[in-house]
Amino acid sequence: MLGGIFRFVAPTSLALALAACSSVPLTQPASLPPAKTASKPSVPAPVKHENWEPAPQGGGYYLDDGPGDLRPANLDEMPSAVPQLEPIAIRNTQPYTVMGQSFTPQTSLEEPYRQKGRASWYGKKFHGAKTANGEIYDMHQMTAAHPTLPLPSYAKVTNLANGKSVIVRVNDRGPFLRGRIIDLSYAAAFQLDYIKKGSAEVLVEKMTPELIAQYHAEKNGTVVAQNGVRVEQVALNNASVLVPAPRIPLYLQIGAFGNRGNAEALLTKVSSNHDSFGKASQILSEAGVHRVLVGPFASIDQANEAAIELSAFVEVQPVIKQDLILP
Image (cartoon, rainbow, N blue to C red; front, side, top):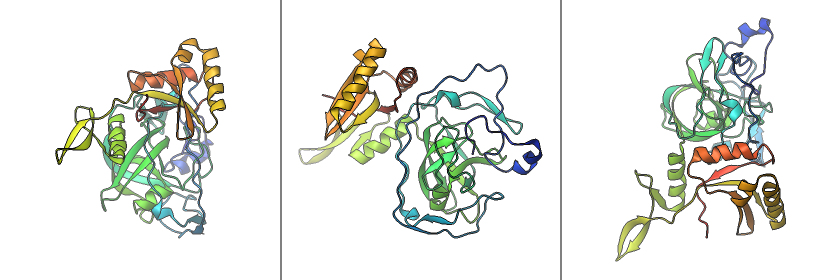
């Protein structure tokens, strides 16, 4: 995959790199303005694996890529990525050209995407390298690379041959070989059972805010109606009925601490650097966790813009939260 948008290869190696996903440069038109500084990505904590086992060799992959020597023993039990609303990295929204193909990334989490096509996977060759989102690629996490989906975002990928599905966090760009629509990590491709074949026909469905809300509502025993209204199932007169769920505002969580003093320090820093954000900030303490929240916001795009502006004066890892019930 691409370690940011400025990885280049020597011209003599370009011919050998045509089928690879990350060994060719992303060429931006010269007329584009300089990339803006984005908020620091909300990077998931590394997955800790207790036991490792030899990784079966072979399978379908390009040149010197592959599964590596070892893999986690519990790889078949690894859960899918948990989708959440994360601000888009603004530097990865500019149109770009690779291998004669032009791509225009999505700039909104709400914009839908549903596409059938061929999926491939990438492994040890890029393991430990930077992704286009500035994170570190871990082939044993549930991630993916896509040419145009927002970075970061989440997608449900279904292997059409066997019906198996996973949810992945999209944090990289690629693949750029014609006929491929997405590159999955080794772990995700393993769970979809196409490591040996090297590729598979899949359905890629972007997890829009509405789908993410439905995902979490089902986990929490609530339902999201077609009109977007959240409802919950309750017992009334020995019958099960749906009633409106408590109002859940949209906030930007810029920090979560076990020590309230640290939360107050962040709140003070925000207030001293940006008066309007300071007035809109608060600390929500529950179950020993002190969350620093900014908002509420009227839309996800508005929260995303605030996250980018906040990054100009304070180092934070913002997450858009729509599952908080405030007093």
